[in-house]
Length: 316
Ligand SMILES: Cc1cc2nc3c(=O)[nH]c(=O)nc-3n(C[C@H](O)[C@H](O)[C@H](O)COP(=O)(O)O)c2cc1C
Ligand SMILES: Nc1ncnc2c1ncn2[C@@H]1O[C@H](COP(=O)(O)OP(=O)(O)O)[C@@H](O)[C@H]1O
Figure 1 (cartoon, protein in one colour):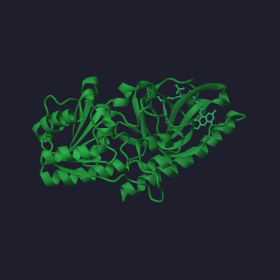
Figure 2 (cartoon, rainbow, N blue to C red):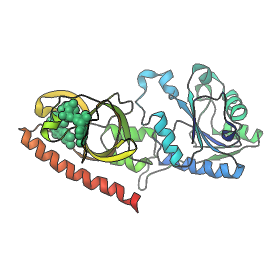
Figure 3 (cartoon, helix red, strand yellow):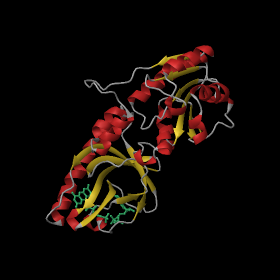
Figure 4 (cartoon, rainbow, N blue to C red):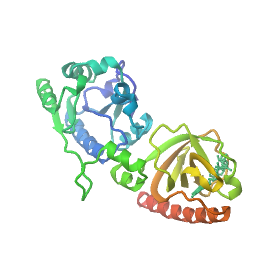
């Protein structure tokens, strides 16, 4: 997979392919359906499968105060798309000049001149150009003029639900702590990343050292205790995750902490990724430390179950 940050020197293997334009935040099952279609179109035109995204999302430039944190950072998005078989992702640095282009000019410059796309795939609610003036009807006309195929893919619904899968629905689920619902919509369990910093220095003496994360740049699940895993140096470790304050110790400041099961060693200063499999419980104020540690022992057992469940289909 090639990850490009501009369209100045597009390598020849990225030209002449099947293209989709969108934000692809989170990479959910609706995105996966679009990718399936572009892969089919790419085979038909004997070209690459190309995803064009804006980095950051245009709303971040236009209405910064109304922008929720994203679900994915750029490299993670590229990694998830690569797993679906995408050949190239363009993370185009969003700028005013680009957002000011008319729909026709955007199509001509980006789609025709710079990427030389031969086919396109979008969802029915795709808009492009200044003030979102271009819709799929206009896109259809422009594609016909350039002898390009256009496929409009119906949005994906979860089995038994009317609502369509969308990045904002996934964000809501995570913000509300329902990481399992997020998991059903995403192509992989939700992950955040951060740097390991110093906490109160208490975890080790409780028997549960926790890596405390800071500088998290995507959405943080609601306060609670979760089953998940840590990704460190490309390996996964089952982890009991605590998000919120430490009321048992009278500490009100919310933290994101992970205890890596069956791991010992220093993690300070390292970047870690935390993946969320299931929500276990709310944060409680325990009467004493012994009650807290016996509850954490139970949490760890629940994490082991979730983690081995998650591992099983991968081994098979
Ligand atoms: C799985 C797990 C569950 C936890 N649950 C609670 C809880 O319900 N209430 C609480 O006060 N602290 C809870 N904690 C947080 C501990 O209080 C915290 O990890 C400990 O005080 C160490 O803090 P430190 O890393 O800043 O040293 C939990 C920690 C873990 C790893
Ligand atoms: N199994 C483990 N899970 C998490 N951190 C661990 C583990 N083993 C050792 N560590 C190290 O211990 C540190 C946490 O210890 P802790 O006593 O909780 O201190 P702090 O309050 O600074 O987080 C982590 O940042 C990491 O460097």
